Structures are given as structure tokens and as C-alpha cells.
Length: 354
Ligand code: FNR
Image (cartoon, rainbow, N blue to C red):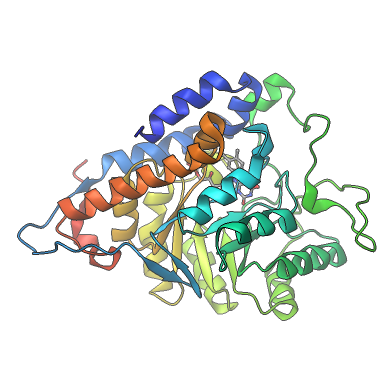
């Protein structure tokens, strides 16, 4: 089975270069995107031996969801640019792998259709919905209600996007719109269930903690904030009653030169002190990366681009193979670290010598 890097190679060969660059690209000089990967590589694992840990169990429980491994599908936009089956392929593979898929609001498939495909695979789909809060709160409410009706189990509010990051690869290609026939299906104005006009996603710098309070009184779903990097914001988030945090820099696609997520994680873990679970995404490509993130305080990680590479390379089967590969590498890493479960991964197993 191929590594994530090999899937990226195949995806690059198959994809229109404009779409490859949309997926691979990041903001500015792409310094953060590179450091997400490089910072994992710089950390060392310091394994324990003779621990008698023969039976390994990778399963986790997270905010009422169950996953067969601490490896989730991060929300990414426009899956139909990667493969004609788009989000339907991704969700089938994620549900078959028995893990959580965080469905992007910017999906090219409606959340109702993603949920229906998930239900064909499993009676208990673990779907979370990623939301860019829209300044038109009535419209935001309508999207939340659609997600609730579709049966999602948590809302992930992305807070690192008051404005869109500047992605120079997209600028060079003039890529700013979906091709004809594809739209952001979750932004249709649904009136009486009839498909109507599709809105653009509005990024909004108006958003504040008051909007999180507003969302909390609107829905009983657990709310996670995605894109928190400053420990003070992590503390504020806990005070505002969020259920979890995703330590993320949007794969380096928003503000360039912010820290690698694995470097930001320890301070956030310290600030939150176990009050809410942390998920990390950004640069996770190997089972060893998963182990480092868990050792430094994450309960799970998200995979962004690796899932897109699997999807572009071979549709549903490609996503399934990427998830299985990272699962298998993580299991192997646990064994080599003398660990039997994600909970055995403690901070003393990670060292930085440089
Ligand atoms: C993203 N990401 C993202 N995040 C989000 O909250 N909503 C979205 O619609 C998208 N869309 C999106 C598209 C593409 C092409 C990429 C690469 C990323 C960010 C994503 O959730 C995650 O934070 C990063 O992808 C994690 O980094 P890696 O795994 O790609 O290195």
C-alpha cells in the first residue's frame, strides 16, 4: 500500500494543474504550510521498551462520537474538483473506515446527500459539519438547521478566516470560481425545499465571541472552534463554553508565517489543561506524526490534503487506502513505542534535539 507521499504523486499526475495547485497551495510564501510538515520531522520519538503491550486498541471517544482510530477527515472544500464522485466518495470511505468526517460547508455536494450516502454504509454515521458563520444570521441559522436535520453530531466553526488567505498559485492561474456545473450546494437558498439561488461564502471580520454565544443558544450540538493558535484564545474558548478546539492553521492557507500546528499545540494544551479535547490538523502525513500530536496533547488529528490525494488518485478506494495506510502506520508506531493505546502516548515520548 502506498504512502501519502506516493498518493500525492499520483494525484499530481492525474489532476489538472490548476486544481492540483488549489489543493496543494497555501498562503503567501507557503512558509507555514511547509513548516507544518517540517516541524513534525524535526521532533524525535523516544520509545519505551519491554512494556508487554501486545494487544493494541486504537479506538477513541470524542464528544459523543466514536472512531476506530484517532485520525479524522478534516473539512476540505470542493471534492468534485478532485474526483467526479466528490464528497460522496470521501464519506463512503470515511464511514467504512469507521471514523469521523468533518464535512466542509464549502462542499460540492449537499449535506443531505452526504448524510444519505453515509447511512448506506453505517447506521450510526459520525458526521460533523464545518461552518463559516455567515454575517446574515438568518442564513447561518438555516444552514445549521439543515446540518441538524441531516443528523450531524457536532458543529466545527472555522474562526481563522475573517478574510480569505492570499493563495498566489490560485492568483497565477486566475482560479477563483468553480467550473460550470459545480456549486457550493450548502449555500443554496432553499425555499419550500426547492433548489434556488446559490450564495457565495461570505468571510466576515465582524465575527466575535458574541456570535459563538449566539450559536450556542441556537443549537444543542457540541461546538468546536477550528483555527485557534493563541493560548489566550484557547482559554477564552473554554470560558465561552465550546466543547472542543481544533488546533489548525488551515493547512497554511490563511495567515502565512504562523507557527506549525505541532509547535503551537503544547502551549494550547497547557492553557486548556484538559478542560476540552484538542484536535490537531496540518502536516500529518505519517503514523509517527499522529503519535507525536497525541503525545503532545491532542486527542485526535485531522487529515486534509492526504484525503484529497487519495480521492484524486482513485476515488473512494483511494481515500480508503490513505486512511488505512495512516491507520496501519500509527498502529505500527504504537507497537514500536511500547504503547497499547492512544492514551499511552505521553509527552515524555517526544523530544526536540535541535
Ligand atoms: C482546506 N481547509 C478547510 N478548512 C475549513 O475549515 N473549511 C474548508 O472549506 C477548508 N477547505 C480546504 C480546502 C483545501 C484544498 C485544503 C488543503 C484545506 C483546511 C483543512 O480543514 C485543514 O485545516 C488542513 O487541510 C490541514 O492541513 P493538511 O492536512 O492539509 O496539511
